[in-house]
Every structure is written in C-alpha cells, then in structure tokens.
Image (cartoon, rainbow, N blue to C red; front, side, top):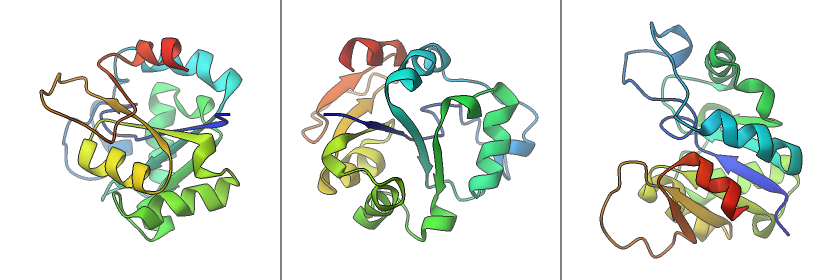
Length: 158
C-alpha cells in the first residue's frame, strides 16, 4: 500500500528558471502547470514529501521558495542533499529519506523529471517510480513504473 509520495522539486513542483543562487531569492518563481491542483488532492490521501539535490538550496531555502507560491502547505516532510549528505541518484539519498520518514521503500512512490537522477536511484532503493516527462522525451525508460506528461495525470494513477 502506498503511503508516501516523494516529489523532486525543480521542474517537478516549481519551474527551474536556472537563475543563479537559491530559488528563494529569484526574481521569478512559479508552479509547474497542474502541480498545485494535483497536490491539493494527493496530500489528503498521502504523506507528501519533497526531496531535492539542488546545489544552491538547503531545506530552509527550499521551504522559503515553496512558500513564495504557497506550495509548502502541501508537504509533510522536506529534505535536501545538504542535510542528507547524499545527492540523487545515490541510493543512500533515498534510503535516508525513507529512514527519516519511517516509510518502507515499497510504501513510497518517487515522482521526478530527471530519469537518471530521480527514477534510477529511487528504483534501486526499492521505491515505485513515476517519470514526469513534461518535455515528451522519446526513448525507453525501463525503471519508470509509469510515465506522465502532465501533473494532473497523477490523480488517475494514485
């Protein structure tokens, strides 16, 4: 049974405009289309977790950026590589998230936009995976249990 949804941050929940420095200080921040609508429903049924390997932001900076669009209210747990000590796709990143939330990997789904970082590491850690392929990349993604191109599609899968 799925209990937790682990979301990547940049280009999965909020758009990554590739400005310098932490996202919390960027001149512009924005939701990924459909993410808020999906989270409004999903956070009622699941523990929603956000976990990032962003280089410029620790967990507090991530929370500040999320609060700029009102996204922080939908998440129950927040993790960054700066506090975890590991970056995606390192299996220890995902294992640390599981240890800190108390969920088993089989009870969680990783949702992310980068197949190599988000999906491969999560699958190797024993999690279910959803590849958010908003760009419509062509190819074979064998470790993705599902693939979506719009965040609203999560509501039909979960």
